[in-house]
Image 1 (cartoon, rainbow, N blue to C red):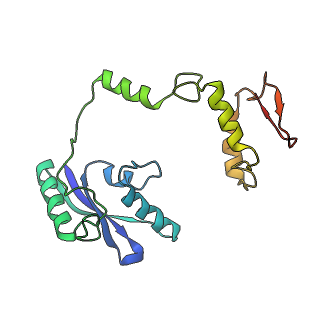
Image 2 (tube, one colour):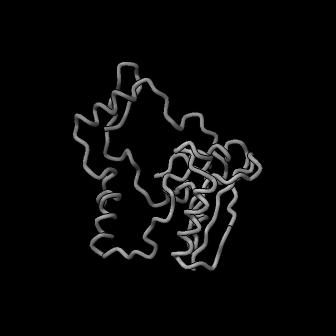
Length: 189
């Protein structure tokens, strides 16, 4: 069974900013930090709400629907509230609704291709190995810039999590030598 839901903005009298249809955890997945980034406007709205100290809410508008009924309700609601990108309303939806391939099952071959596309080969940090020239350019671009984590105040929980994550891992600088820059700083190569 399917449902139709809305994401709401508590800063704006719980005004709807996104309408969707789904089943299971679909509505909740929008609010996870790792949510799909295809709709940047929706994600930017979620981020802005959180930056203002609030949390977007999910309102389930219709439930116990067939997929066809859910598609129809989604289309009707998007038409009613209007899409922001078309200048017709305030919804961040990028389509008029009614699309989707719920329940599509990928073949094992397709699943493996998707895994390979996003996951580097074992032992590599990147999908394709860097050339020496590429590495040198990265090193040059970072000279004189502070570390992105320098000055970060880690909580006890973060320190504990990092400690656990690093247990059993090898020293990243083992077997490498220091390469000194003109300013006296160094990096390992």
